[in-house]
Image (cartoon, rainbow, N blue to C red; front, side):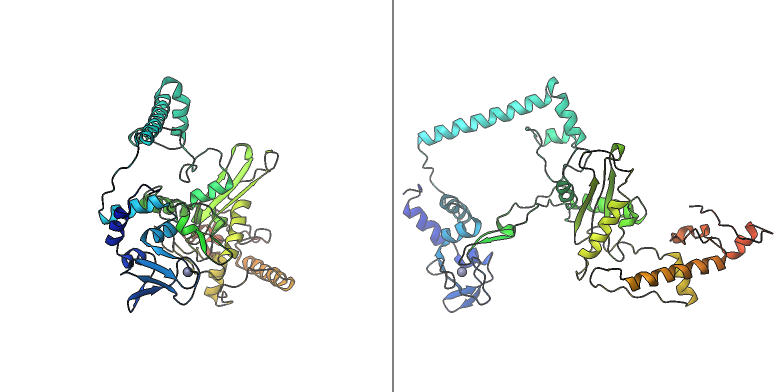
Length: 418
Ligand SMILES: [Zn+2]
């Protein structure tokens, strides 16, 4: 046999494999007489034309014509070579495969193994030698505990995995975003991809990301991802990225600014999406003192508002639906006075400010200004700013204001205390 397996061995494995069980792991099968039927995993269809005959140990699709035995199924489904499929099924069914390697093959493999061992040993020695100080410092700067690294047997220079770049080193915007996507993904790494599946002209599935793509790994424990989400939600609710806050959507993230304001960014996520926004100049010259909480957070906000239109809002693992945005004082006061009810915001297309809308906003602004003047709490040049409920003492009530400036006929603005 070219594959190195005798036909007796192959028959033995085939006879021990339950085809319905094997195929049933990836296809929902229903009994139909002697056969079992389901939707073909190798082409798209709405009515089942994929059949399994457990007695004969074969499968066949009347839609796309593929068929074969247990080995054939596994080769197609898991993209395995024939010997791999045989080994996998032999192991599962408890059939011991005789080692049929010739001394010549074994000798070549032994040589390769030796090369790999030597290379690993070389990297280990280099890392822990005196000359490896720079490499060790680099590993440490990436937040990898060297003792842990040693325990894990890290022998080669560390590759850029999605969980590593969350530090101070240079990373691309894509890597930055991908790394953050680990948090809402319960600590599992995310592989960026743009191709979801590949099919032949006749519709046969050749490759599908969720089946054949890189499998996610648990980069950090889910509990740590939750804790991080909790902390980063405060960046948005009361930290540097308040401009990124989304109404009714749990949000977490982190702003960043490099020395001399060369870069400014905000990377954040909801339960639905992760988005990274970076601003900087092409020639690496400093920006006009831009910080991550200004334009980047605002841009992130506007992108995410559009992205979440018509989407079912998901929780962020660890913080759930988060806390609602504090109600701005101005609208709270209006609601209390029964003057104007704040409109219910329903999901719809991204907002576009029309001429009429702009006129109305200007009128509303004027009304608010006049109302504020009448209440004597601010001058016309100082627009009413939303204030957190906890610091409501910073908005002077007419009585306390009167007490603060006795005898002064013309009210002056009260300095904000927060
Ligand atoms: Zn098919």
